[in-house]
Amino acid sequence: MADKLTGHTGRVWKVRWFGKELVSSSSDATLRLWSHTGKSWHCHTVLEGPQHGTIRSANWSPDGTMIVAASFDKSACVWVKDVEDGSWECETSLDGHKNEVKDCGFSPSQEFIATCSRDKSVYVWEKFEDMEEYECCAILSEHTQDVKCICWHPSVDVLASGSYDNTICIYELDTASGDWEKTHHLVGHTSTVWGLSFNNDGTMLASVSDDKTIKIWKRMEGKWTCVCTSSGDHTRSIFDIDWNKERDVIATACGDNSVRVFNVVQSRENGESRIHLELAHTLNGHEQDVNSVAWCPSDPSLLASASDDETVIVWTIQD
Image (tube, rainbow, N blue to C red):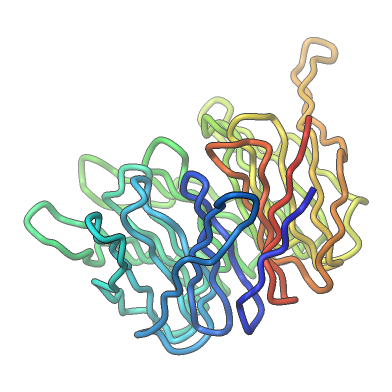
């Protein structure tokens, strides 16, 4: 079962949940907030300005009171919700990147925001106790090409980034020095890394690439090791991935207009742990590239996808 959400007038780049509410970002320079009432989904709020141009990404704060949006105008804006009347206002503009901002997100503690850009950098912004706004506390220039995506660990302030240089970087905060440092460099993809997603406890990281593969990386003995490479199910670039936090399943967004759902199968062979992916569903409803997928955190059967065809689709996926 699927519900198609229309309203954007340009390609929809990203969709993300807070509870059962969705935010979508688009090349039409707007954010749309969607909720389900009765038997249908509807857009209840459109956020636009001060950003001019494509809004490439948007993500909720963990408490749902803020949304950070990344724009091709080199900025990231922090929208804040008025808890009394439900209205939204752009409170802060995070400026500093020298080129298009591609992705953004809040840390699980909500103390930090990360942004990444075509300028090959990742910025970390911190909200200090005596300040109302986020200020840049780190510029991480570990990639050699565009940084396409970032992903925070689900429970601690650990950050991953994926790049046009085909690699993934992991960063951690050194509590003694207060500095952000690259702690791991994951090499294995043979083309652009477009999307990243941790599993529910942060012990594994899934990545997808222009090389049409999914890789699962597992932290073992202090190192991140590739324990699974899945290929052959996608006919074009894979642009996004999301790991369901309640079920051991992942979803992918692909340039062949389809959404795919895989079971993550863990087994033991000759005393060693094995992981492989089994294709469970191929979802066809979009008419152009699928750019983003996201599982609903409060209902693990709901999956949202966003596409170049200017729509968002909410799918119901049964076991």
